[in-house]
Image 1 (cartoon, helix red, strand yellow):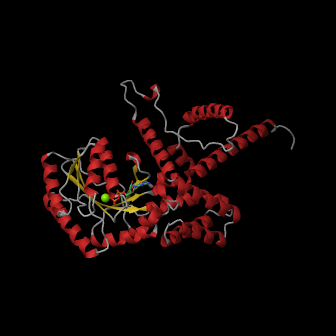
Image 2 (tube, rainbow, N blue to C red):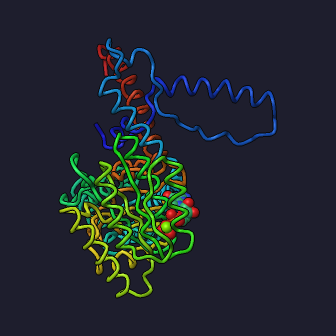
Length: 411
Ligand SMILES: Nc1nc2c(ncn2[C@@H]2O[C@H](COP(=O)(O)OP(=O)(O)O)[C@@H](O)[C@H]2O)c(=O)[nH]1
Ligand SMILES: [Mg+2]
């Protein structure tokens, strides 16, 4: 099965469902036309994940694992598709333009592709590596038309992400005992929001979650975390503004231990102007956490704002210098057309992206995975490509049938 077909099958709404949707959509658009003759542009089809039907449930009334996984993948596909809309418009349009402009695979095409990817924040070194791989692959497979490179380009993006397998997207969370997650990053990148979303996620998984208001520096930060706690329904441990964050953590850990909490998520202040101050503070916080719970913090997550582009990379380098970051949360990916920053971060920092922020709603924080990411970046192109291939295969099949009918005729 081709790579595009596999992605389409995995992340797009099942054909059966799509057909009923198309029918509904047609009926709706007929209604729309009746109601107003003015709308000229066709509405973009919004795909919804598969809806459960009675047949999806086993005799015991439980949904099968296969169906569950299928629905989960489709929901993930829909989330990435929606969150990466801006980037997708940009990536698809640029790639289509390039392929139309340079029909033949040659050095000019590769140079233009390099430029396009660098402009999309993919990062210089990553682009060089990616395009070199493409050159080799084109040569190896004797691809001469740029049109035939589409799929290879998308596949290589996933490959380049996967190449170093020691970097896992999976969170280091134990089933037994207290787990501590420390959230770090500069002001405004989305730490507190991400903590709220993470708490919501873990709570939905049945974990007991508690939050610690370790940003005692910024006015209003404690209140903001408390609000998230109320919204999600988890307890927030805090002290007054200006108190020592390490003391907040100490108290929070003791409370978490005595209340049988599974996951304690700690907010921190985000000032980077004075690196040695930040280092001292983070070191102290980590020391307190580590002394109270062996192996803690289990994760130190660095929040980066995707809309800040290359600036996010330099922030990450500074934080990497002062603390042992175990994973990245890349927020506001929905707010940028330059979604390539994911690749730059992964490749240049060698830190895995564990979550991406795809919007401001509670369920807009999603675990990162390179396949759902490229699906989000190229969904329309992937679907169109698969549909065209299938249509031309059907056409060839029909030709075969016709030829077979003619096979006794003299040539
Ligand atoms: N669109 C969008 N906005 C986000 C996302 N994550 C955070 N934000 C917004 O970013 C702003 C700053 O977030 P906040 O959590 O206060 O950042 P902090 O200073 O690092 O704690 C808020 O307005 C959030 O709603 C995201 O994934 N997408
Ligand atoms: Mg905050």
